[in-house]
Length: 62
Image (cartoon, rainbow, N blue to C red; front, side, top):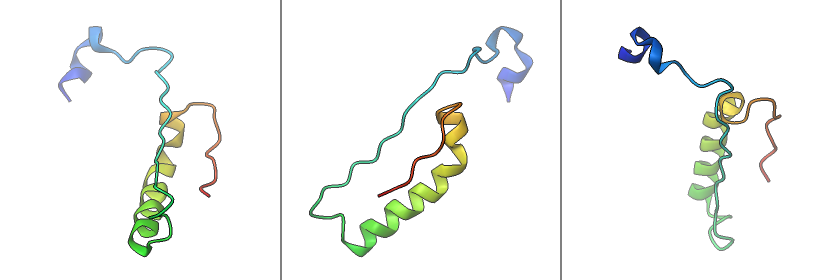
């Protein structure tokens, strides 16, 4: 990346934290394709938990 060659563009220390929420309407929560999407997103984002919230444990999806 271009920023890697620019020392003035170094990432901030400590890195910023960001909580990520996914809201699902209660009427569509049980729809199979919505459940599949939520499961897919949770699985895809779980490896990024440290980057999104350093020092926090990933929470279970209900």
